[in-house]
Amino acid sequence: MASMTPDPIQRPPHAANADWAAEPAGISPYRITTERPAHLRDWRLPRQWSWGTDGVWIGYHRHTQQVIDPLGRTLSLVTAPDPAHREWLTAEARALGNRRHRSIPTTYVYWPRDDEAPRGPGYVRHWIDGIPLSMQLRTQGPDTIGQAMTRLRIVGSCLAMLHERDETHGAINCEAPWMTRAGEHYLLGWQWALPPAALPPGKVPSLQWTVVAPEWRQAIAQGGDWWRPTQATDQFQLGAVISASLAGATWERDGEDVLAALDARGDVPRSVREVLRRALSTDPAARFPSMAALLETLDRAIGGESSLAGLGVGPVAAVPDGDRETAAAWQEARLRAATGLDYDLIEQLGRGAYGAVWRARDLALDREVALKALNTGIAQDQAAIARLRREARLVASLAHPRIIPVLEFAERQGVAYFTMPLTPGGSLADRVAAQGALPLSEVGPQMDALMDAVASAHAAGVVHRDLKPENILLDRNGDWCVGDFGIAAAPGESGAAGTLAFAAPEQLRGVPQDEGVDRYAMAAVTFFALTGHLPFVAHDPELQLWRQEQGIDWGTSWASRLPGPIRAWITRGLAFDPAERFESTAAMREAWGEGWRAVTEEGGGEGGEEERGKDGLRGLRDLLKASMIFREKPES
Image (cartoon, rainbow, N blue to C red; front, side, top):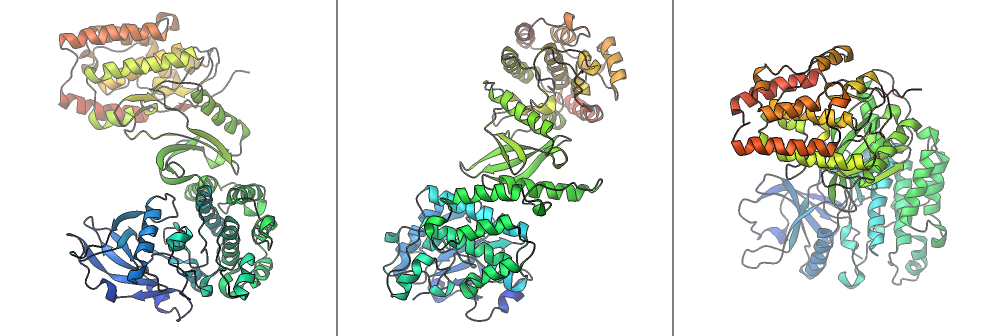
């Protein structure tokens, strides 16, 4: 019977080579090669591709060879040494090309058989710079609880995805999960995750490397057709592998002795052991009804298990004051644990005192989104969670193409977050910092559309209260959109809130506020966009209030260049007395449209490129100095 094989992988090109070299024969299905095997020696790669030095035999059915593509990337060429297995390899490549999950190596290209090249068949996928779980257990010892729970979530979510498509894996063992030095988790063995008709007759995984589900044992004893993978056997295999990772053994060799070793490990919480033991039930009907149900039970279990605090898998304990690096690491681990079934966090886009925004990949829909979550220090504050939920609901109640919508709000393991479409163009603040003052021909129509969006929010009874260049986001077309309704309120609410440079006088004084504060902010944003400067520069509320009452000094070089109608519109929008501003956002928009169109038709309002660049740098310095955020202090 052929050897069981997880899928394409190579030895790491670093110190772990010593681990690979020391692997005794028969202890792993992986065998390192430093020369191309016979079935690849007549291959000719496409132009600008080249061969790498390393390769790996995976049992007898697959070989993976290092190749370098024209972009200089190290990739894996996966082939089937036996010509009779070409259709099997093609089915594997086709299936992987249509599967998207963070634990599945990306497939880049498939080469069919070409006798003239000669080349093929083979497919090229991501090179994994890591080691399998089995080798980790032999060289580094068992998983920590946090590592094991992360592995369980990631692999489990991949299996849940397969099961939703009525597919199974069937070959999960301690050779299939891999982890890189960067902490990325991958699942291999994909040549077996195919419909039975796609496999060569009689081909099944090797018993030497198989986690045998109880329902297969009788058929094995009778020498019959034993390998019949189901969702229940996938669950059993995953439970066995995670138990082995915690016990420091491999299920394939040690079997149920793993459970005794797991019970002997005193730091594994009872709730985690109960989840694993249910997945390992002898009776398939006693296991979880689905992989999703297993993961949900696990989330509830570790969410209430105080012994998991600080391990990146449950509620995180308080971080000592001043230990920012530890706090950031704990927060990221906690967020990844909570969102890992649905989102892959790619990079942090920004962080404030309240929360952080991440660029993330939606694993279900294979798209990038922005994910906003509370910071660790306030993540357990019910008022903060309610505020985040309120923000999500407020935005969800608004429907306008220039308001960034909410895609999902969720609370998992005590972490509250919501997702929004990603805006690749950055913010208006970024654009002005990079380019300087913007021409009226751009600002005119963009502010017109922005005011229409704000007017729609006002019509729904929502006041933003923190309109500023950082919260005006540019979509992939460069259009300006309103984001971050974090301190939005209903008209008439009071409290000191907003950003110093763009807050209306009534916000700085903490008196009741209406839609006029948004109109004030839009006038200030317009001034900033057209000049590259803040209308008023101050570093405390009292000085800012005094300067707001004095009004803009139109004698400055950057302000004096603005055409008369635009200056008049900004002056009214920034009036110290709310009663002297525009009576409605619709009226403000109408006056703006008349003003900028008249100026544009006359050919005025465009500053020089050199001056705009200088203004942008000065404006950025002003913006950084004046970006003081006020805490919300509602009146009692």
